[in-house]
Image 1 (cartoon, rainbow over the protein chains, first blue to last red):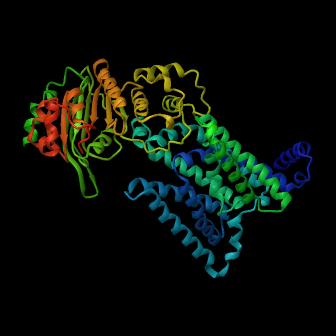
Image 2 (image 1 turned 90 degrees about the vertical axis):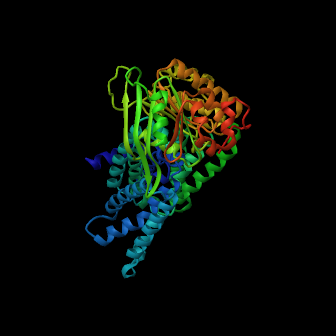
Image 3 (image 1 turned 180 degrees about the vertical axis):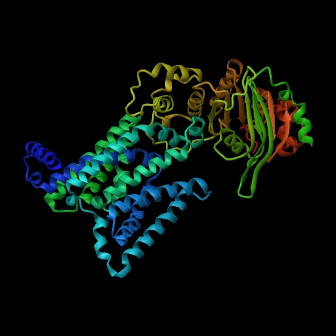
Length: 285
Length: 270
């Protein structure tokens, strides 16, 4: 069933994009993956930036070192499955300690982040086999297979549904935690759920985008959008648009110039960010 | 002991059956081994404004957060409505001291109302249905013209009025104002207090206000509580400002509001 579905999608894409880049199956897969994953980055990015969680999402990427290493050492499970589970636990732990302790948030995150990198590197370097992990540092968008796409589609549905449920509460929390509390919002619950969503999206895309630049996908779209919008609807729309446009154009450019797709996408989003910075005085009331 | 005597003489601790009231018994909060405050008893009635005064670090903001339930605390909160029934938890409105949010955040006043009032996510929600209700809420604080402004583009006074409007929708039983006008200019400050005074008269709610502005406290409050780790004095403004402990903590300035002389320019005491 999956195969016939994929074949009809290939047919549609061949009709829509009669270009050289779209004639390869791996490019078709990469293109579909970009269409599924970049809107998620665009959505999540709005609250990562508004709630000042850029450092937190960065630490999720760093935590991936340990997650992947554990997976490889265990052998029985795929590194990605172990990474998803590890990242969710890691994000809960940070959220929990952050809420319990008096230490400032960036200190707590800094401690966890560096511990996770160190642990991961220690395990990866065990027996001198570090090279087999280096693909995770840069990622490879062209290695996507139909099974990955099915997993992505599931994650896409899950994240959009969860986002619709918790967005209002996140927005109120971004204004003031005590005020949110007076409206009956449990900060810890909402924050944990958001952290878990981030963890899932980050860990599932790390194999394609790479540990080194994954965080820029979560920061740049909203950072650009907030320069040119005045309300939440516009903020979402522009953030998703920036993520998708840079995703698609980055993938195509990377194909023609033979570069790493993830990095190209990030450079294009960064370009859009600087453009919005110039437009800011004219568009923000 | 002194505290207890004063507390029982305060007119607010009289019969609880007639009006709705909130009674706070033996509230205490600790951070690790450090006692933030302990043994706090308070009694606030609907239609009354209770001012909480005290030096910095006295535990005033923490007390409000404990009442909100944000911080774990010892002691109990009893709420009794006008019919004399224990209804458990009062609806609490809260206006924070200052906002630690990014002023460049693209969120309009309408957005934040929609986030509070609607279950649909703001990015999917049509604003048409809620708009009349929001305008009405904002009119209560004379801010209906601000509905489409970005939160970051509001002045301090405007922002506090918008937050007050949010805290008043739905109308709470207990309204907590945590130094609502710190850092607000003179005009904004007077307008804010005017609105609060109006609320006290029109709406059936108890208001607890933290303020460093003793002049305004003397003018608007029905009950004043002096807090410094524990309740040092409580009663009418005259009683509390005449108290030796208040004079010691606030120095010369405590005399000013009682004699309704000018007082310090900015009203800041701390």
